[in-house]
Length: 150
Image: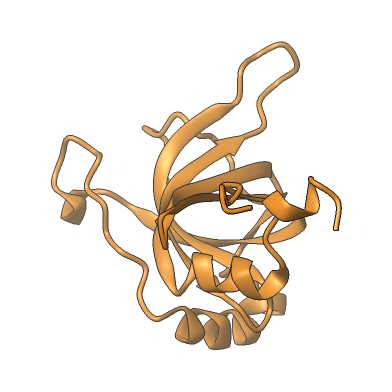
């Protein structure tokens, strides 16, 4: 096993780490030359399809703009079993209201359990419009802190 392999998670470790839900940061592509639009989000993970689901704020007052088919990268990290781990997933956002994905979305959302509600809006969440999106990752990048054991 090479040194780089010792700091990467295999698919089972990644799925266990992502669990059923949590929090992280999503970064959305912006026009060339602009930094990505990055915001904290909560997510749900479907280990059967290796898909992430997000409950994102939407509407004309939101700085994110149009989300459908937008390139995005999601990152989450944390410590488990005394070792730091992280997962980055890159792909395109898909609206779950699209008829072509609605049936599989319902099944996937059921497998995620529940997506936590994280209030970072400065106004009651009952006054914020939300929509569900999924990220079908084209690429996962995983890292796990190297064990210091010989």
